[in-house]
Length: 245
Image 1 (spheres, one colour):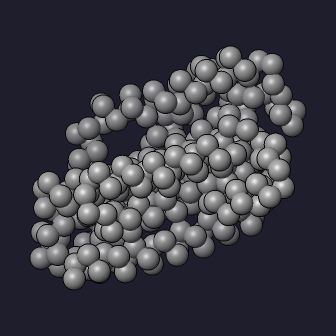
Image 2 (cartoon, rainbow, N blue to C red; image 1 turned 60 degrees about the vertical axis):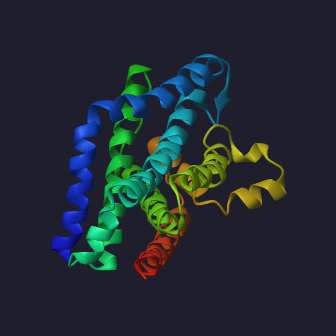
């Protein structure tokens, strides 16, 4: 199982290595625009819980970016399925469903961690130094686990690359803006806060922000992310089995 898992992961890493010179700028552009537009245009005049808006914003960007980049593994899977027919080759190889899902999820997590490193470097350039402690990286890891697991399952369900774009628009984009990444959740009405707390990105943003600012995150946020990630992982294994059939 380990060998087949590593084979799937190694394939994704080879592809990413060839694209790295293009991926790094793409990982930088959106966060850089957010930092300039929100950080400079609004950040100098806003303070949240005793911290500057830039200190509030960057952990939210990390939560959002680790979500989008880990979910982006779905696009890689579908390109391989629809254009290169790699999935059919994997079906013929001695790779079980669990190993395949684990390898793809690990690849998604790796993408998210690398993109997080890029944002941390941008933050230092803007003069914001965050505490990158164990709980910070654990939050990033669990957030990436949740959305890379979700990505693999959904990638098995879509019928075309265009369907994948729709999933990103209707699933990921709303969470990116409603998960407490850009503004405090307390600004919402109570009913809105209750709905938003259902989203896993909300717990990720809270945990990553608290840890990066030197506070103690709520353990419940990590439990929710871990449980959600495990649920999505199991569903993804089932979806891969169904796609093979």
